[in-house]
Length: 370
Image (cartoon, rainbow, N blue to C red; front, side, top):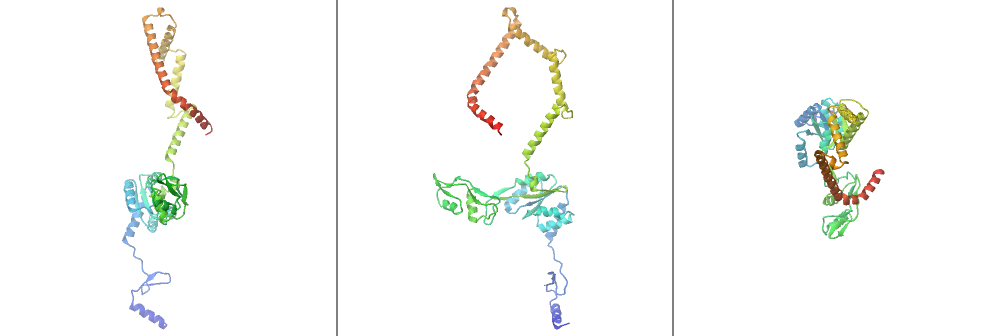
C-alpha cells in the first residue's frame, strides 16, 4: 500500500461522516457505504393517494393547468368538486403511483405528453365525453405577457375604438397597430395580423392588446386525454358537436321510422302507427262504400245531412219546412262570417306579402342552387 493510500485511509478515519461521490455519482460516506436517499413524507403520501385513485373504477384523466392563477384555480375546483376529484402532483410521482397501481406506462406517458403542469382528474359519475364537456367550460382568456407565444394568429380588426385622442395613438402605432384620430375617437386603420402563430409576444404589445379587450392566452383546465374502461381517448377524439350529433340521430331515427312504416315493417315501435293508419284507411273505404256500422254511421249521417242541405239550397223556399229553412239560414250565416274573416285577414297581409314576393323569388333560386 502506497503512502497516498495510507493518507486517504487516515483522512477517512478522521472524518468518517464526510460525504463523497463514487465513480457512478452516488453519494457515499467516508467508509464507502452508499447512502439511501431519504424521501420526504409528503411525497410518500401523495404517491399512495395517487395509487389509490388510479386503482378505482371510473374515468381517469390528465389536465394541464399551467398559467392558471391560484384564485381562478380555486374557483374552478369548487365548481367541479361534486362531479370529479382533482389532484395536483409532479409527473415523477404520477409515474411511480401509476406503476404501483399496475397500469401500463405507455398510456400515462401519452396523457402527460401535452401537460406542462399536470393534474389528475377522477370521476365515477361521468364518462370521458362528459368530463371533456365540463372541463371545456373552464377555458378563458387572459392578457398576454412578455414571453408568451401566440396560440393562433392574433388579428386586430379595422374600426373605431372607445379611446379619445391622446398618446395612445402613438402607443398603438409603436407596436404595429395602425391607428389615427377619426371623428374624435381613435380608430384602427386596417385589419392587421400583429403576431403570427407561435411567435413571441412583447410586453408592450400584450398591454395594447389588452386595452382592445384581446386576451389571446387561453387558460383553464385543458384536457390532454382520458382513460375509461381500459380505452384511452385523446382530447381531439372527445371534441364533438353534441347538438349536431343529437340532431343527426333524431333525423336518422325519424327517417328509419318513416321508411319502416312505408314498407309496412312491423315492430314494437311501428305497430301502433301501422294499426292506426290501417284503421283510418278501413273507415275511409267503408264510408265511401256506404257500409253502415257503429263506426261509420256517424260519418254517413253527417255526409247525408250535408248532401240534403246542398239539395235544399237549390229548391224554392216554399218547398222547405221550418227545420230546413233554419238549418240553411244557420249554414249561410256561418259561411258569411268565415268569408268576412278571411277577407280581413287577406287585406291585413296583402301589403307585406307584396313586399316579400320579390325576396321569395330570389330565395327560391338560392334554394335551387344551394
